[in-house]
Length: 251
Length: 163
Length: 199
Image 1 (tube, rainbow over the protein chains, first blue to last red):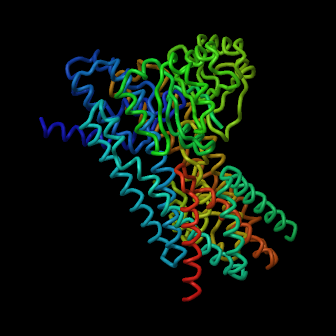
Image 2: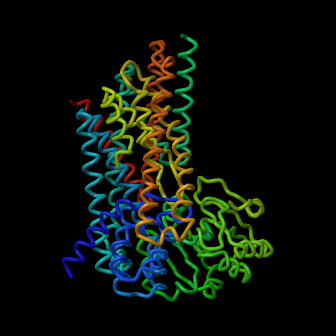
Image 3: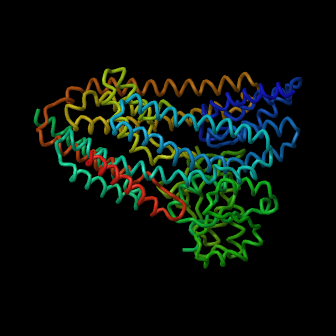
């Protein structure tokens, strides 16, 4: 039994990698969840095709979670189904688990860990590392946490089942985003003068001038993130357009 | 600065609310108004698990909420009020709890009988009827999923064709 | 996670013989997309095709920063088109896996539909990337035109401003005391600068 459930969990883990594949505006990851749960449901309804059809249909409704933490829900649901928890409870669980898995994952991965890894990669590139080392550092560091989250989530969901909320509340995941803010702020700050030096160098502008401009703008951007982001993209488009037109007119 | 946002969202507490609106508005407390949830501890644990330490979550029934909304409104802490459906919001409005508060439709997702009006908003006939009742109760209503998105006012929303 | 600009662009650059230019183009796009959080139904630009397009356009940018500037903008434009194609596909997926409930009731059919959505997305991204590269090759008459030397300075300053603004955006924090952390970031920045000067 233990060996069987180990194999089952591995299959759930692998299927979780594709949970986003059919993301859509109606059910979001709904079909993805159904797809991921197939091994568990098929085992549960081994001899009963009608029952399998019914439970697949239930699990292909609305669902959404951070993809890396979707394993928490997948494992907990697999366990609840295998233990025969009634379907109304299962539905309520699904409805509630969407929220923490989205929120925890968004804050930790999208808002902290991914920017941190990509800025770190750019930082070491600017410090003079070869490009492939920088790319390697990004892929290795980012995916180490990515895969750890999937495995950790699967174990937690499998162990706690319906009560996984309490375990999530006490988990390090809740504190981690705030902790990561410090290195993220530091790395993003450190990239600014390095970038100014590198770009100033190619265009022959003095470092004091470029660093001053870059720091001033980076600090200004903290106050109004939305506006600064739009200005950045707008500046890029307008600036490049000016150059293309300038280039054509000289040519 | 009391009530920052009064939102109908069937996902209740999630990323768009906490990161999207929360960091935009300066959020301290999320009040979820839902009769069923106010009774169920394991579900409350799940919803709380997604919150950062600085943000608290309260779960209240409509009955309790009607009494407490004025207190939240005069509190120094910035609060976001959430309900799962328009009906709960309408009940609050009819009890006079939503005076001078604009209702934000932030997310109602696909379900049997619901048709897509906006990418994040699916409405059934019943939902539309509830919206009209809100309008009759003189509550301002608009739809907007994230702060950077366009705000769609109720009149315009009700005229949109389902697709 | 190959679709992140900081990975896709240098790899595309490597295929085209110039990974360094790809790295730069990718880094600019990466920083501009930091604030896009793929939450719920919201969508940012499609970073994979954007990165490959920018890497193609950035080939040999060391001829001058203006090439990098134009390349990054081309990447953003392609990424923007890409976000619309993603939007379309998500509607198509809704028909595929959220319309006909009977089609999801057997493991075989559910798997088939789910995976065909994946294949469609790969085809979409590949098609867009191919189209973006071909468009650039056709546009190349404009690229590489001699621009006066002073313009390179201006281009470098534009890129620098754009990226600095983008970097300021990225550290959005919820918890209190963020001013301390912001100062830590700037302090670290100045530390690096002083360190470089002393060296």
